Image 1 (spheres, one colour):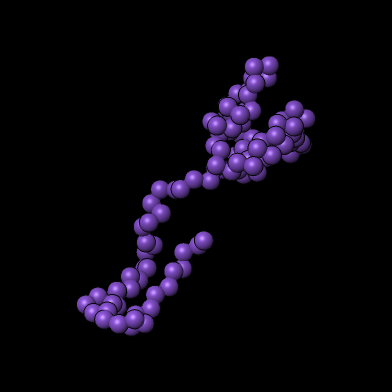
Image 2 (cartoon, rainbow, N blue to C red):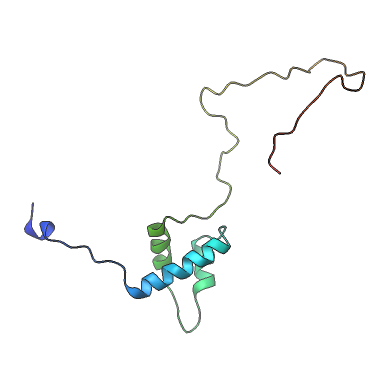
Length: 106
């Protein structure tokens, strides 16, 4: 092992980056759907231009990711059992003959 590796002390974030991370956190808390590009638009001003790569790095460092529907959410996992529809072919002829429920979130 090289001595420079042994004695290396990581340098933390600058005060400017910490202030920017605080602004990113406040904005992300209010609007979690914002990704890097939209966050860049919201934070950049004419008197303080920001690099999009800097915002991307800081958001990744903070563990922030935009909330949006990910692809392939409707695919069942491997081994998932598909249950049969038990009312197929059953004639519903009276009230209270068949009951159902809705488990979706409000």
